[in-house]
Length: 263
Image 1 (cartoon, helix red, strand yellow):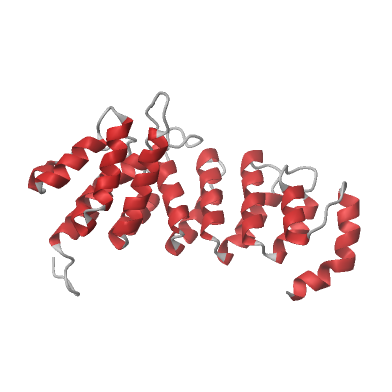
Image 2: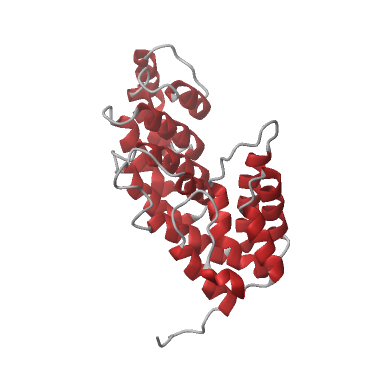
């Protein structure tokens, strides 16, 4: 294939290709390309597959210190984002996810591209059971949110329309709240207002709107007061007011909305 711009360094190109092809699984997967990698990288990738959470966490942390050399480990680090294997009596499993996120963040562009490709992949949501979500997919959503990746906003907004994808929608809403992009306000308001949608997703939408602190959300939050659990707390954080009933909120809003809408 003829390239129209300079090729990526070979190690980056191989890593991005592997990330696109990696199976949707919680655990890191083995790859035929492993034999081509430097021994130090192979050793850490092998440790990411260890049965001991402490070793997996150490491997993820060690890869962060390797800089660009760790790029081939990206697919395995993405797998580690969904790590929920038991670590009795310790927080090692949480550390695996945290160190994997830290390393992916340090790896920058190639890691972000791999995460975006995973989000856009056709098997991101299991067509056989769309109401559930794999730990790997949940980890991808979590990481994109924590990285505040703006290119993820439109695909995440697209997920909100997938009513059957109950858990994916909840994670997507949380990611949009973390990214804090104004493009998400109207889609989140639509989800918040829709009484036929999953109540947990509507609660998450209220929290995300509270993070975004956009005045467009105040009236919709008042309209669902008493229906959506977090509406009261979000209204308090956005307006400084607390009322016991929707009628009081409506009365207050009629007297004060011009002040908020001007801002």
